[in-house]
Length: 377
Image (cartoon, rainbow, N blue to C red; front, side):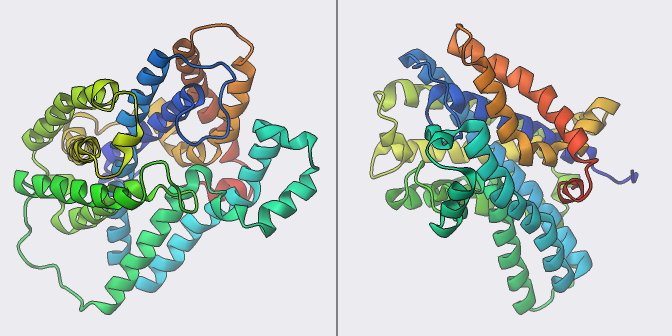
């Protein structure tokens, strides 16, 4: 491992993927959000509120942070390799795993593991798969790999822009990352999210992508690309990062209040439309997403730039976990379904069991010929 490897970036990426597991555990028991399986027990209003709060808090920053880190390394790769090599590399690293997921992992998960709507008793797998392809459902079969597909699209657009724009030497004075830029990003992100959600509220998907969140994703991918030029991952001020994390933490009660009281139990007022709740939510979400991303980078560089053997092993398998965790978590959730316990406790149990099982499975998968190569990042 090179001496210049930014281990804090690997650690942040690992933490975000662990939060993905938590988010999907929460969706399993809240019934709010898209997922392969929902526990048959009906959650009470307090269960729903707590679980949706957890989902919303994670959603406000974890994918945006991953897009920012991906933007940084996309810019770095493009700068080093050139457009042609960059595009071919991204098609392999992002396109092939996505193809594996939509053609193999998703249909097997739906039919055999989740058995969605008892599909296996109605039609054979061959018939189901034929309809899955011919009726176009394969276009929405990306599951969590919508992220890889969206990232691939961002990278191709970025590469096209680099191909047609005049080359810049990059010898100019680097602009430091400051409060003004952070505030500008928050406002731009909030405005974009609010406007998009007038037509496409959160929860509405296009090819399994919730475009209502894409203002943040696009902006933070662009931030990551700019961070390479400005060397912000290495130079972002620790005090700025600490302040950003404090702001994000201080804003958390706004989300809780909005879900519990501001929307009066009507989540549709929050997720989009010409409502003050939607505007406040877009502003809170954008503030949290931007501040958490900047804060994690600046503070992580100083406080979390090392790895023990366990964290290093988990970090190596993080992408494999991201690709293959759906069938594993669904199988575990179905195994827990008969047990009588609080849904909050069951959610926590599913999450705590899923982490070691998924990372253990990833270790095996990465040693598998062909498939292991596809998920080795």
